[in-house]
Length: 90
Image 1: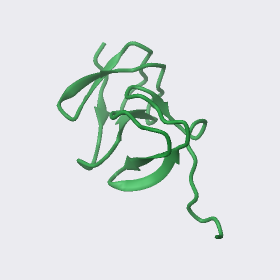
Image 2: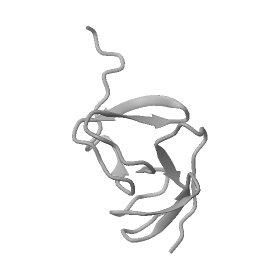
Image 3: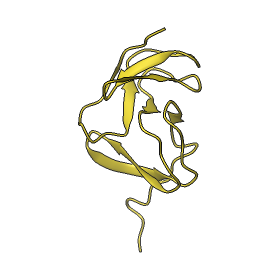
Image 4: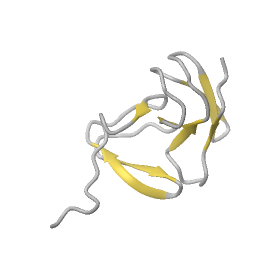
């Protein structure tokens, strides 16, 4: 089933789900239909591009973290697989 989602900036690598979605549901982003690889709750992120190892996660045009292990498009992107060094002292 096609689910509602949004992205704010053309450089975003994730879309925000505007409703709960289940594995196998789809979203539209960047002119293509993307199949979700797992359940994604309302207001959570799903990858709309393939992310390689250490790839940045871009939301609202800003880097919000990175994916140490990478993730294919359709993956639920949340702090369980994402890292962020913002605010850490060097």
